[in-house]
Amino acid sequence: MDLQTLWFAAVAVLWTGFLLLEGFDFGVAALLPVLGRQRADRHLMLRTIGPVWDGNEVWLITAAGAVFAAFPGWYATWLPALYLPFVLVLLGLIVRAVAFEWRHSSHDPRWDATWTRVITGGSLVAAAGVGAALGATTLGLPIDGDGTRVGGAFAGLGWASVLGAAAVLGFSLVHGALFLALKTDGPLRLRARAFALRWSPVAALPLLAWAGLVQLRSGTAVTAVLWLVAALAVVVTWTRVRLDREGQAFAGWATVLLASAATLFGSAFPVVVPSTIDPAFDVTIAQASVSDYTLTVMTWVAAVGLPVVLAYQAWTYWVFRRRLTAEPEHETRVAA
Image 1 (cartoon, helix red, strand yellow):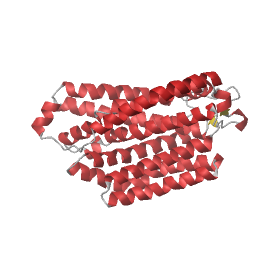
Image 2 (tube, helix red, strand yellow):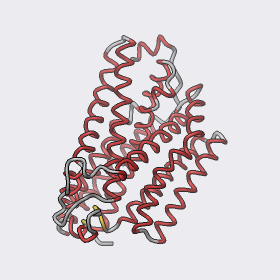
Image 3 (tube, helix red, strand yellow):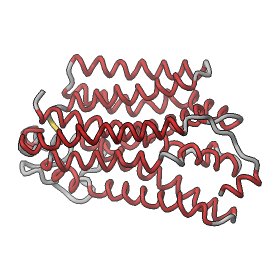
Image 4 (cartoon, helix red, strand yellow):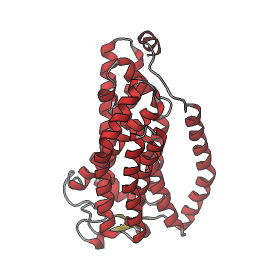
C-alpha cells in the first residue's frame, strides 16, 4: 500500500471514529428533552457522557488536521466550498461546551433548564453540520477545474447535504439511546431501550441510502458486500434490543456505521471531492496529496503518538465503564 492510500485510509478511520464516539454523546444530548422526563433523569443522562464528551471531540480535530496535513488540495477545495456547515459545526460545539460548564454554576432550576436546552441545540446543530458537510463531499460539490466552488455560499448545500445531515442525526439518536440503555439502570434504561427498538429501523434508512448511492455510482463488489453487512447489522441491532441485549445491540449499531463508512470511503476512492459539474474536475488523492517525504514523516509521528492517544482514551472508558443510576433530588442539587 502506497503512502497516499495509507493516509486516505487513516482519514477515513479518523472520521469514522469521530462519528462513532461523538455520535453517542450527540445522541444523548439530543434526547435530553425526549427521555429526560425529570431533572434527575437529565442529570443522569449528562453524567453518562460527562467524562468522555470532550475527549471524543479530539477525533474531529485530528480528522480535519489529517486532511490538512496529508491532502492540502482536498482541504483547500473542501473547506471553502462548505464554509457554512463548518461554521455551524464550530458554533454548535462552542455553545455546547460552554453549556456543559455553565450549567453547574447555579442551583436555579431555570438556569439548569436553559443550559440543558443549549446542550441539546448545540449538539443537534453540530451533528447536522458534520453530516451535511460529509454528505455533500461524498456525493459531489459544484467545483470547477481549479477546485473552486461555482456559485454562491449555498451552492454546495443541496439534497446531498440534507441526506448526510439526516443520516448523522438519525444514527446519533439511536446510538445515544443504546448508550443510555447500556450505561444506566432503572426507568431511563427502559425508555432508552424502547426508543431504540422503535426508531432504529427508520433511523438507519438515511445512512443506508447515502452509502448505497455512493456505492451505485462508483462502488465495487467489496463495497457492495460492506453495504449488505450494514443493512444486516440493522436487523441484528433490532433483534438484540428486543431480547434486552444492550451490549450486543450497541455493537450491532456500531457495525452499521463502520460498514456504511467503509462503503462510502471505499466506493469514493481515489476521489476525495467529486465534481457535480464534470467528472474531469474531480479531486483525487494524487492531486491533493503532499510529497512522499512529508507523508513518510507524518507516518512515523502517527505510529508513535497514535497508540498513546488510543490507550489513554481506552483507559478512560474502562475507568467509567459501570452503569449509573439516578440520584435522589437532594443529591442531584449537591452534585449540580
